[in-house]
Amino acid sequence: MLNKVILMGRLCADPDFRQTPSGVAVCRIRLAIDRRFTNKQTGEREADFINVSCWRQQAEFVSRYFHKGSMIIVEGSLRNNDYTDQNGVKHYSMEVLADNVTFGESKRSAQENGGGYQGAYQQPAYAQPAPAQSAPAYQQPAPQAPAANNAPGAMQLGDLGDFEEILSDGEVPF
Image (cartoon, rainbow, N blue to C red; front, side, top):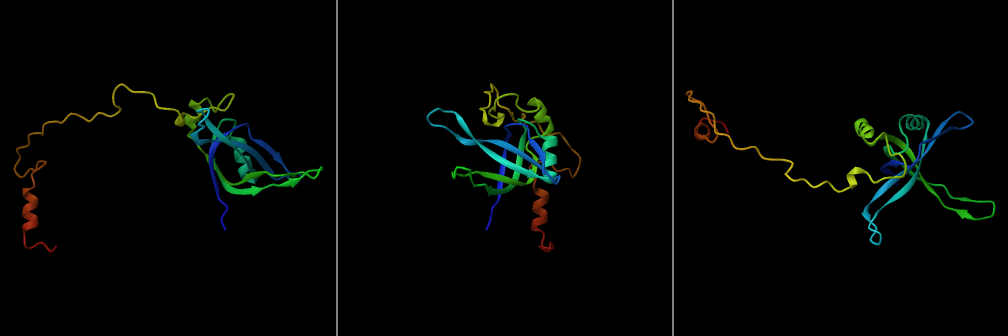
């Protein structure tokens, strides 16, 4: 059986770092992950919000280096945390138990974004349409005239005479 989850999203809030009574570090985060499509009725892109728990070294790493708006990649497993409250009502919840956590963007990119989003969740730059360009981004260089090289035995582009001699020679072992 297989239970593997890989997520890439932005933190909705600063990490919630705590320690158990026995001193084990635990950190809870909530990721906002954009869906690939837009809502047909509103035309807006929606997001899913997923709870993640990190333990021990992963918890310390997340609490030290991530904050609200940071892009993060989480690998882990999906856990079912169903419970029944005092009134006998059954509650269903799922969360990801992180096995591995890493940065989802470069340090420079994070700094250009102001160190994360300040305020409400925003759509990432990669999901926004590219600005229109008046000229193509890449222009092929203009062809240049071949350099004059009159040295004896010099080969120029397109001169395959030397190769034809080698291939037609009967002494070549191939």
